[in-house]
Length: 151
Image (cartoon, rainbow, N blue to C red; front, side, top):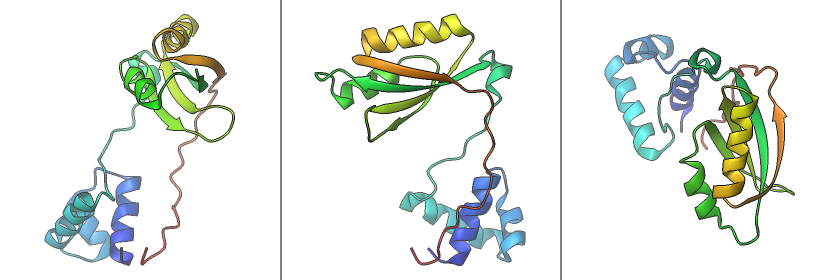
């Protein structure tokens, strides 16, 4: 990636709705040149998608929690990952090192909904143990990533 590619990635990370024309104005390229670079970054897998950040509370899911998950010894990662795709409320999942296997970020309507989600993890996904924490506030991190040119 050259400096222009890094700038395109950074600008799209901060605002994925920028048009090719707007991107071009900011980095001093034509819209067509930007479009070609974006297509190349997508084909290479650097840009994997464009998403909307949503206010989960406005969708009726005001309770966010982080759940550390330890799987039963006989539970495969493939089984766990397939099952959690079917459980509503799981926003994202991260495979970890350490004493727990995964960290889940979940969004629920209320505490009872959170309890139902945790029970579903234990009953259907082969989870042995969970450790949950309620999210009080999430800070939007829009700082620069510090991408180095030439990587």
